[in-house]
Image (cartoon, rainbow, N blue to C red; front, side, top):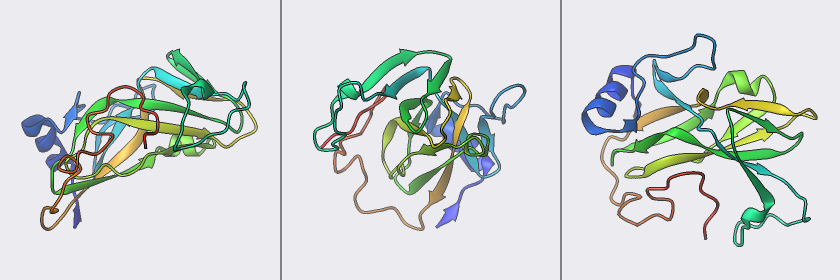
Length: 184
């Protein structure tokens, strides 16, 4: 298994629609960087946010998740309450090749502010907008900027294709759009 370089990412995006919209070079003037990098792609966060709130003393249950625990906002700057989190999504829509596994890492700019970005791997054959979780680990409110870099995706190409892709097994998050809550 090898990590794939910038020219491979560009080719997959332009020839096969792996990332839409695709930014061919890293943009960073006056913003948190995004676009293709040496061995990855820095995706942007969209302006749709679901901010966690516990007004009703709800219990977070992955088997019975209620969107009543979130306040929805469409904004250019999202304020994450102290010791809380927000759900968001990437601007980019991904179509992962059948022989590729994608791992996501948070941007160091956010990590240095105590904001952690969490995403599970993008499996071979998966496609959709990626749901992002931003956790504010600080005791202060923290900002997340829409339309700017949020995380970096690393593409690992397998030596051989897998037997069953995410699409083959009709995964529950296939072709998700918008911010997608947990499903059972």
